[in-house]
Length: 207
Image (tube, rainbow, N blue to C red):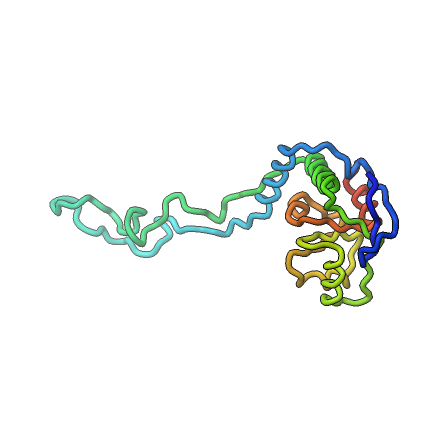
């Protein structure tokens, strides 16, 4: 697949051939959905916890005698049916939400999403993004020239100046090519990649 090559001012400077092993993969929506669910589950913190009847305070004394009052029998006012009592089947912090999925499936789903983005014209290839020092204001100007909406910048390697320039801009994020994943790709509309980034993706995910 051949696409246009831009500089960081979105001036067309040529064409670049996208490797078909990465950007022309047949899409299987069921596989992509399965990988997305596994990633969402693995990112889930699971810190919510409700107290059970044995964990709430009080309840040491029987509310009233067992028989003779005409009321229902109760042994503790910390019962789940009492106000202020424990919670039945509430969330527990010890619950494990982790899901394992084969590496080959994750790689395949990633290439499928990249292929779909390329087919829809959501892949922007630039020769390079060069920022000699961190400057969010300059980065905003550059990104506004490249696309409108949300975008994910895929870096061939660690670029501290670029990362610092981007981190406070809403709806924009940066990610190293080796850390690319399905969930982050789907979160943003446009994907901005350099030629070096394309090579890094191919070397990392095409086995």
